[in-house]
Image 1: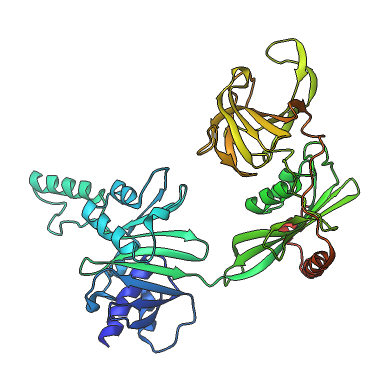
Image 2: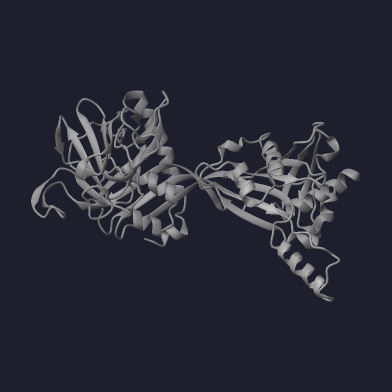
Amino acid sequence: MKNKKRLARLGVLYAALGIAGLAVSVHSSTGAFETLVALAPASLEAATSDAAPTADNVTVQDSDSAPSQAADAQAAPEDGVSDSDNRVVRVKKGDTLMDILVRSGVPSDEAEQAVSSLAVIYNPRKLRTGQDVTVVFGPPQMDETTTLSGDDRTARSVAAAQAKAQAAGPFLAVRFTPDASRELAVNRGMAGNFSAVELHKDLKPGYGRGAGAIQSSLFESAQAAGLPPKILAEMIRAFSYDVDFQRDIQPGDSFEILYEKLVDKDGHTVDTGKVVYAQLMLSGTRLTLYHYTTKDGDTDYYNQKGESVRKALLRTPIDGARLSSSFGMRNHPILGYSRMHRGVDFAAPKGTPIYAAGSGVVLSAGRNAGYGNYVEIRHDPEFHTAYGHLSRFGPGIHSGVRVAQGQVIGYVGMTGLATGPHLHYEVIRNDDKVNPLSVNLPSGRKLKGAEFDEFAAAKAKVNATVASLPVDNKLASSE
């Protein structure tokens, strides 16, 4: 009975933290496990029943060695649950969890204890820039003897109490979601100790199928149809070796895609994986790609013939940009006279990532006259690429560093001679600048013999999966 009362108090805390309807495993320092279902406060009686839970599970690791404190969590009164102060903080570059807690108003000694408790189950240094962290405080403690009647001294006491109420109450918890499959929290116990909680979500793998007609651009049409941004970006990147998205896409073309996803128990998609299959119908020509891993571990996208789509260089090393100036003679918009434009320009918002068109070594990363901030990469003895007008360089990009194809090397800007934010992109072949959109690029791997037969069998399974799945309603409405 004593243990059940302790578990019931834990249930109040988890309900206050929004972790309701979940099966909880409490791990004490003795190694014993107990289980409860954390319900809303009004239904706490259910937490003391002997019914076996059937939901997701949570593991609680107590940072204190005393067995009696493992499940002895701080329980706010039911009336105070809705008064908790939840402060959501977005992780900034260079932030640590300690920084976030102290900046939110947590005393430094309590923040240090909470971080140490979390370290038992998770490395706090793995916090990602842009991630949201929720810091939970209880309601501020009011002076119960203060009233609104009486002399001026009482009135001043009321004013002081009201001012105190605007400050944070006691620090109760911190929680965040490191990935789609779990949530982490550190909760304060009744004795002041902290316990780390790891909630594992019950997620099931599945597939999503999307399809739609292209009205203007693939990017805009797929985005409007509801295709997840990460999946859309991957599809564009896979086709970018063979498709000029500025000139090859026409109204009436179409797309179809199959991708991995994780769904919760309610059927909602909470995360996506890789693109398994993608197809573009361009002016009556069908282009189909399959994600495939060979026996030797090489993973790539292959066409129907078992040919890798990967080329030595990307034709468009930027996502969602508009071709604003072609290769060839033009009237220079700033200098005011005609001269050869030995590259192509892609207009995009300032800060748009720019990718290395191929793997290689950075020859130059710095200021270069009219190019502004400039990067040049040597890919092999035959090919170099150059990128101009960058607002800034990518992380770790400097002369002599080796980069991989698709790695961010900089961001769109308008440094140097530029009238607006754009990328000036050049392909240099044997010291001659050539048109990036028409140059013949070396092909990738070709599957043959038994290797191709295995690919063909895998391709048939993917085709059967595509045929068996309905198109998502939102995506279908765009057709």
